[in-house]
Length: 98
Image: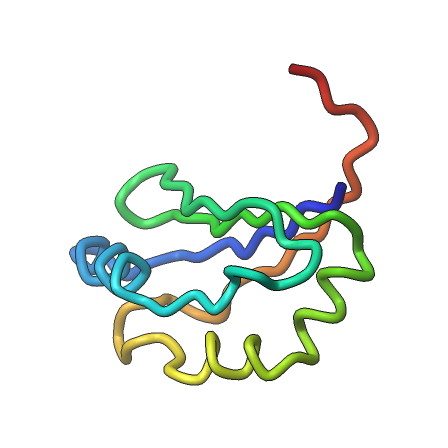
């Protein structure tokens, strides 16, 4: 399994707009080979992470070059909401217990 996270810092008072944008988005992830799960995580009103589980690094890489990826990321962030670019983190799962 491969986990991909984007960490976001949001301008104060913009969390509702940020969360709303995620809730109303068209993710284009349904049916993408290797995609397993997505979550939006909130630490506090200014720090968030998108979290996606993939079957493998190769499945994620294939997604990043797909038409579905271009459609999902075409709108970009609304102006004045995000304080700088997100920070991408990619993790290989080495232990998975339930």
